[in-house]
Amino acid sequence: MVTSEREIMEFIEEYDVKFIRLAFFDLFGNQKNISIMPRELKQVFAHGLSFDASAIHGFSQGSQFTEEHTSDLFLFPDISTLTILPWRPQIGRVVRMYCEIRYPDGSAYALDTRSLLNRMRKQVGGKGMQIMAGTECEFYLFERDENGKPTTIPYDEARYCDIAPLDKGENVRREICLDLEEMGIHPESSHHEQGPGQNEIDFRFDEVMPCADNLMTFRNVVDMVALSSGLKANFHPKPLQQQPGNGLHINLSLFRNGENLFAQEQGRYMEAFLSGILRRIREITLFLNPETESYLRLGEDKAPKYICYSRSNRSALIRIPAANEHRTRIEVRSPDPSCNPYLALTLLIAAGMEGIEDGLTAKEFHGNVYLHHEGLQELPSSLQEALQLAQNSSFTKRVLGEELLQGFLNAKIKQLRM
Image 1: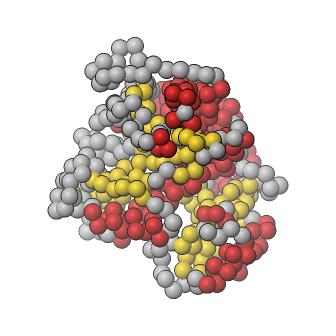
Image 2: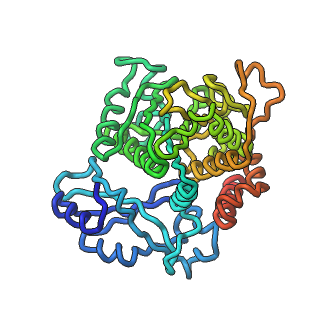
Image 3: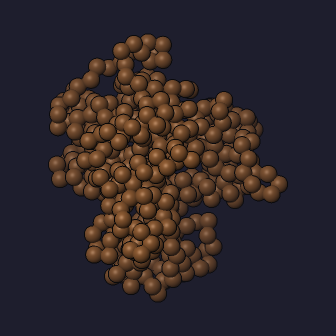
């Protein structure tokens, strides 16, 4: 792993790197980047690279700082995220680094969600604990028409865990996994999902920051491999009305001194952590399910609707998968891939840690939630309801900060009015 500016310069020379992509994310998790030549890198490390924040979706909804006449922000590369892009030429290679976003005075930009998650990671670390996370992300593969435009025609008609020739996505998933491995990311498993043309790739659990970064890299790799195969990857929550939606299951566990706390003291830490999430889930759903079509997915095809947890029940909002002690974890099943994972993880961790601090408990649900849900609270049924809950939440304001929260809310209010 490259760990210093000197090592990066040596890496660039050794691997004939000609372009460096400085990547960052808007408020909603969409990746942006600015490319520079290697000779500019030392200057960027020292002083950052400026860009126009007023042109970035969501940034202009927040602070007055990002009006056109005062809109300069600066990118500072995170050395640990250096990777070669395997789909670019091998001669004159292209590398990418994710960046922190800062104000001209060097302080962290209030709407930089990646920095927000990093601060949350440090807060948990300050308590002597470490958050580990893993994701399971679903996506559809659609055909393109004769002009290369995306359609909603599924690439195949296969179903859950089918194989070729029914499953036509085997080679696509193979190329995705191989590209990810070249970038130092380790997929754990891949398979065809329930919907026609629907696929899933799962990752080995990792520290929370690499987990979020790897998910964003994964989305980029899937898009590029699909494009090179003449297909379009679709991560929308409900791309086909009569078919299962795309979920983003988030697995979380808490460690201290190398020991999994969720497996200690009869699961006391785990119960408190998941109880904190259940308490706050309605308030934070806007950030886990940020699109109008997100609410068409919830409550269908094993996507949760009712707020409860269970040890094995896939109809529950939080599931505790069967696992050995080291891999004991909770699986939050409501998020979908349209969310910004830096925001989603920050809020889930904050809610879970609050649950531990307050010593919360929750009663486990047994049975089919869809058939026997009397007395259970429900997730918001629409984007409008989720927005109102977030707007009235002192928790989201405290965790995200007023400026970031208001920027997100303003953008969603504008979306609903369109």
